Length: 89
Image 1 (cartoon, rainbow, N blue to C red):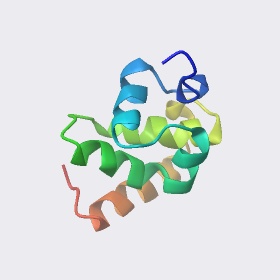
Image 2: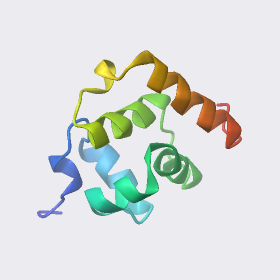
Image 3: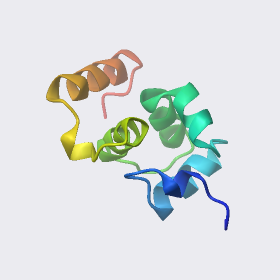
C-alpha cells in the first residue's frame, strides 16, 4: 500500500500494518478510536501470532513514543485490560 498511513506511526512496521489492515484498521484515527487493547485483540482474533509487544507498540504509536518508553504503570493497566478481556496468553 503506497498510502499506508499506519506506517507513518512510530512503532508500526510493515507486518504490524498488514495485520491491522487485515482487521479493518486503515488509519491512525481508526486505531485511536479502537484503542490499543481492542486493536491487539482484533489482530489476535484474525489468527495472527502477535505478541504483547504489538500491544505496547500500538499504545506507543498512539502516544508517539517508543513502546519501551511507555510508563510501567500504563503497561500494567494495558495487561490488566487484556486479562479482563479474556486474553491471558
